[in-house]
Image (cartoon, rainbow, N blue to C red; front, side, top):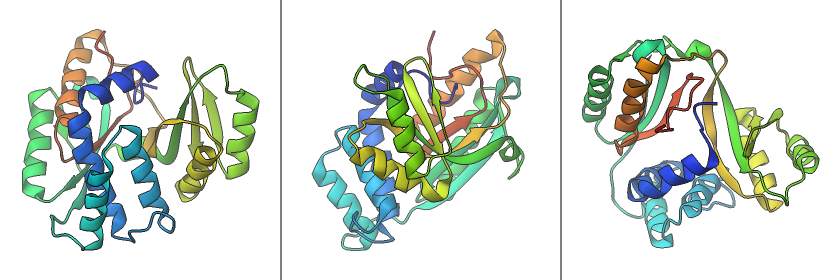
Length: 242
């Protein structure tokens, strides 16, 4: 689906924005650590740390973020914000943020939508077009047996697995997401991407004339350190520059 794009595209985006991603992942670790600083007993923290390590985030940064969350170090207190709206051509957007300044973040997100032909709506205006699911992406390799992977995922509690051109995408109920994540990671599978996301139940196919504005809107939102995730119902990959 357009939300994820190709493995190569995702890795390229991560490489080009690694410093910004460190900041975003540190926030996620800090928030997760509020429920306990030991990843063995805090599944959300364990997943956040694994994702940070996957982009080579230094261990010192990870430990500092944990200590901020547990209160051992001083730091900002982050609030979760969710914005719903429409981009050019009526493509639905859900934007998840972690911020220490709601006015700053609200203004920046609204400005990005206004500048690139979209608009912020009221809570619930687009979320009815999405389902909240755990999403785990694993790159296809010659070493991975599709049937074995599906069996492992389903045994761990997954709902479904979709085979795409270069990846397997596993969907779970949010309640068992960390169980499935831990089971697959523990079995030696490399997770390219994993999170609890809003997955579109109805997609929108933008016209060629809208794609430029939509891709610029996604880029503007992703460049904001307060923005954690940008989710759309576009049937076209908005991370692809082609």
